[in-house]
Length: 179
Image 1 (cartoon, helix red, strand yellow):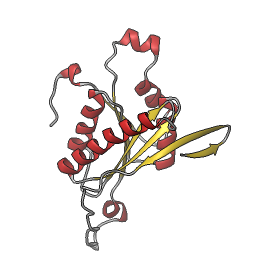
Image 2 (image 1 turned 45 degrees about the vertical axis):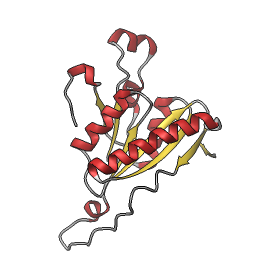
Image 3 (image 1 turned 90 degrees about the horizontal axis):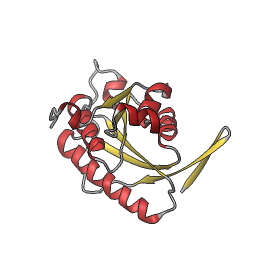
C-alpha cells in the first residue's frame, strides 16, 4: 500500500498487476505523418465495481472509444486497501476485465484499487492520469433515490475537471446491446 499526501487529505492505493496471459505487444513502427499522441495511444480511465453496469460501461468504451494503442486504467474504490479479501476479489475482477478488454479490442490495461469515497477518488485519479476520458456506469437507481442517496456518476460529472466524463446508462435503461 502506498500513501500520497496531497494538500490536506492523504489517500491510499494499491496497484494491481494484471494477468501475464496477455502478450506484450510491440510498439508500432513510427510513420512520419503520425503525431506523437496517436502513436502513443491515449489513457482512458474506467471506474469499475462488481456490478453489471460497470461491465456494460467497459463494453461501451471498448466498442465506441478505444483504439489499438490505448491503455485502459481500471480504478476500483474500496473502504480499505489493507483488507486482503477485498483486495483479492477486486484484483480478480480487474483480471477478468483486462483479459476481456484485450480479447475484444487488443488494448493494454492497468489497475489500481483506491481507498476512500468513490466520487472523490475517481476525480483524483483522473487528475493524476489526465486521461482522454473517464468512463463509468450508473448504479441503476431511480432519480428520486439518486437525489436522496447521492450518485457517484453525478458527482464525477459535476466535479471532474481533468477529462470528459462519459456516463453509460445501464442495459435496463435502453436495453441496447453493445457487444
